[in-house]
Amino acid sequence: MSQLPKTRTAGISRRGLFGAAALAPLAAVGPVEPAAEAAEIEPLANFKFDIEKETGWVGEGGSAKEATAAEFPVSQSIAGVSMRLKPGAIRELHWHALAAEWAYVIEGRCRTTVIAPNGQAEIDDFGPGDTWYFPRGHGHALQGLGPGECHFLLGFDNGHFSEYGTFSITDWIAGTPPEILSRNLGLPAAAFAGFPRKEVYIGTGRVPETPLENLRNGALQPSQMSHKYRLDMQPPRQFAGGREFIVSAREFPIQTTLTAVKMELNPGALREMHWHPHADEWQYYVRGRARVGVFGSHARHKIDEFGPGQIAFIQQGHGHYVEQVGDEPTELLVLFNHPEFQEISLAAWLGANPASLVEDNFGIPRSVVEQLTKRESGILARKA
Ligand code: MN
Ligand code: MN
Image 1 (tube, protein in one colour):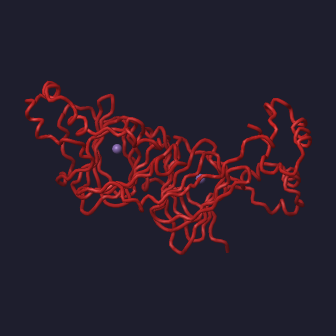
Image 2 (tube, protein in one colour):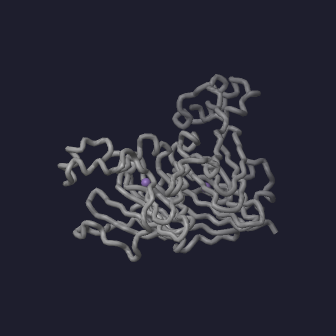
Image 3 (cartoon, protein in one colour):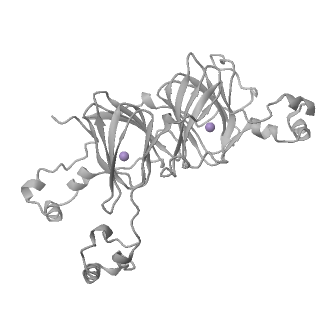
């Protein structure tokens, strides 16, 4: 790929282009490709998806709405599910062959069980502001505790997690010869006729006991690496225009493939212009509204507006900002597909250069350069 700014070369002669390339050391430029003959630059992909507008899966025990790469093609690295469980309802025992699962509880309470490959097991209760993380392949189940519905957002570190990637216990049992089940699970073969004939997915159940009921096998080692993290209990990064609760693998060691953020923007706030060097960014809007502006190189810019139940996806390395809209504060949940949080702020970058270089880069007088912000602000407050 040529590093020349392709979209601005229309009026420049090929001789001019080669001339410019010749000024740079060859190693830095790489193989010189005539920009005029290079392939067309694709426009920026749609980066907005309305997950709560989907009907999704609806059953007696609850519902699930998906945003995978099938529905939202730009989101190859992260998928999401908005799930609701009625009191006692069970998202049955299952595992994900292709992805780790993260969740944030928005409303209500639920319980999870999980087994790790080392045999260690954990059972936990969750309420609003709590998150969980199940590494890829770990067997787990979820249950609504009531009172009222439990609503949580699930995130997966693979946009394709859903297709042929979710393995449910009833699905496995239903398709296995009864003689095998009998030998393996210690029941007469005929007993399996009373088991579900196909995958249950979300079933109804009784509201479980509180405090926690014992696990069937009392000899199990408790998990030495917790799957639960109380994101809202963590001290936030405080900025003039809002705050961010960030959890990376540093705070939550088992969360080895993702970083999660709960972002709160006060009315009029601006999450400053920045980019993430090594991660895609996936956003779910819980309340309030915001406009997101994305810069994708080669003069490609896109702005879209988001509100409750909508998802934004910003590809790795793309410049972006989030502008709060409306009088109600805006709250969003953000996932990055990397266990470490990294960001470069445009303002900080401008502070990391000599004034003369900035002056000549923009062709502006020194007096103007001196007024340019030179530090990171995170979230700027409403303009005075
Ligand atoms: Mn799951
Ligand atoms: Mn960002």
